[in-house]
Length: 473
Image (cartoon, rainbow, N blue to C red; front, side, top):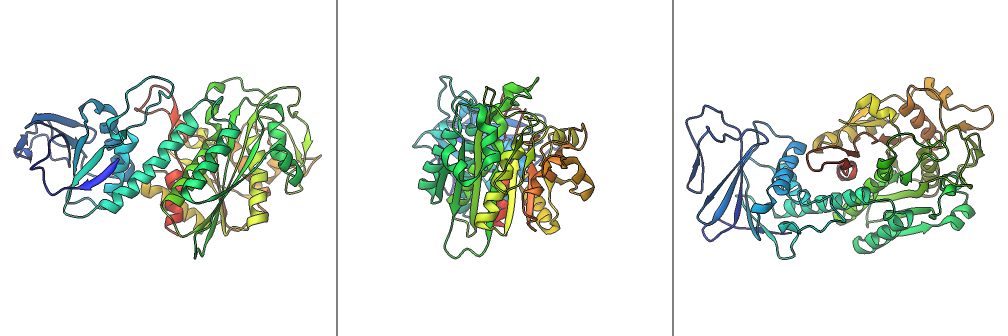
């Protein structure tokens, strides 16, 4: 998609998008644009409504914005138009930018339009969305030059589209090796270095907790390290993403919901998408990211409940439940990152627990940190773009939940309560008391139901949140 500013519609023929703020159902003053009058009996700008009318060989789509806008709602409105009115779009499309729109609103609208091209039918024969044709150009009419903002919006949406695909594609395609190859190619294209450790190298350097999880799979684990080092960077952020490409539960095999466990690498996908976007935007902050990628599968080599395994940090771990595997690979990821790269701030993202869904539902992710400044910065960054966080406690009162009699720590409390908190306490144990660490449990927001598909699918939660957080440092 290319962007072009035009002065007017005098020589334009095609589809015209006209966003309209809500008036009232009883308004006697029609909405007017381009010599078209639309009366309130049929359309008055109510949120989530639109009105289509043909005139002078052009299709006019009046888009209802409602009375007040937030970033996420605006993005969804334009995504809906692009996705559900695909048949009215050709190669010529013009967006009329309201005079009151600021850069954030333009960003949300344009990003939404591109996200509307996403189709879950990766293995079906479908027509390409008109916006994805190589020669497609989005024209816009505005008193202000929004070209730079629109280009940024496209970069945000492209990173999220790639994240959608990483999570939604099946586990026989999105394997640890696929993630390693994808990251290597993306790093070459966008300017960050990538190092990948396979099973042999991981064993050599002592990533024992990570390797234990992948023992039952024929697919080789891949420990993926990314380094983005812009000149003059004064801050250094570390990211870790849970990369379980499929989770059977291991020998504590899942009894429900396994068909959706291709999404258990959504934390990794968010980190990968964020690295693509951060480097694409050329943000002036050093970022080191780690994705421990493996399958939690079942065979004669699988690790066992009651095993005691070692970790990169040198701590022994008692295995209570092999389905509490994400925290095991994150433990090595966090330890390796903190010991070898010493970032100023560390954030990990993981579809870690069902417990967080029971607590917060599907509206926001769980945030765990003892650093209040970091908590505020993350929550503010999320609120601005509609990826919300809610902080839960990390009190010492929960530490007994991970205490083991035989090992330094155990991977599961065995209790039916406070599961998200005890999982976070386990991760905290491997952060070497880092003073600026946050854990985001995104299990309820990374993969879900909405109007854009009939089945659960990826949301790309975390890509824009992390990028916005880093951009605002």
